[in-house]
Image (cartoon, rainbow, N blue to C red):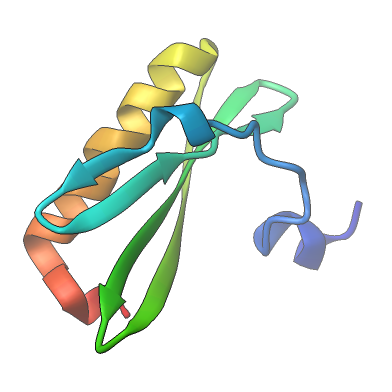
Length: 90
């Protein structure tokens, strides 16, 4: 796999649609990405602004061996980003 495809997330994330979390008007969906050493922390953050759904894909270098722990960490990191940046994420 090329460096660019690894950097830009061509690996299929482990879908967690049933784990959608609402936080301060944002929707967070954890989507850990399978890696050789575990799961990469990844989440999708969405919010409707002016009638349009805006999306930010959060991908971190952190990897966690357990998928459930990675989902929880993905949600926690997304909440932290929302607290720090709010709608400036988009």
